[in-house]
Length: 175
Image 1 (cartoon, rainbow, N blue to C red):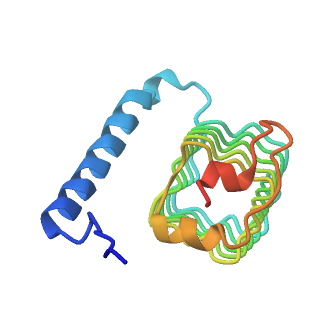
Image 2 (image 1 turned 180 degrees about the vertical axis):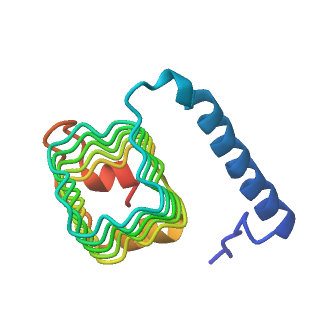
Image 3 (image 1 turned 45 degrees about the vertical axis):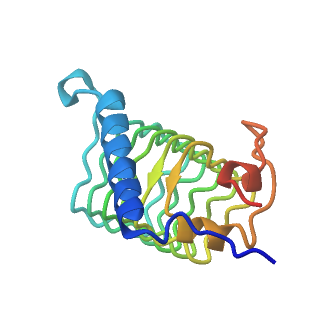
């Protein structure tokens, strides 16, 4: 039986892969960024306490929730495309059916969050905590999610997104 060669065992190759990933992420952000001055309806909740609030079925496209406390907040059915939720706490939040296309969810706590049927196409979820999140029917197509988080999510990923028609397992690249 032949030994399997791991291409990532070489520290130089691993470092180059990390640098390439960071570079591509920065390029993607630069190409999809919209100038703040061009957005006439930007909502800014930076460093705001929003626990248990009801934002269901609202148009919050491009809203900023940087470092916001959003435990148990209801965003079900809301349009959060291109929203910025970096360093936010969405512990137990309800994002079921929310459109998070292109959203930046870097370093966000989504522990026990409800992402059922959420659309996370082209979203960035790096360094985010997704433990025990409900993801049935969520669409992660082209989303940037840490490999470790993907492997954990694939253990229980199921369903098909009712809007995009994409299987959750397929969108995560589960095997």
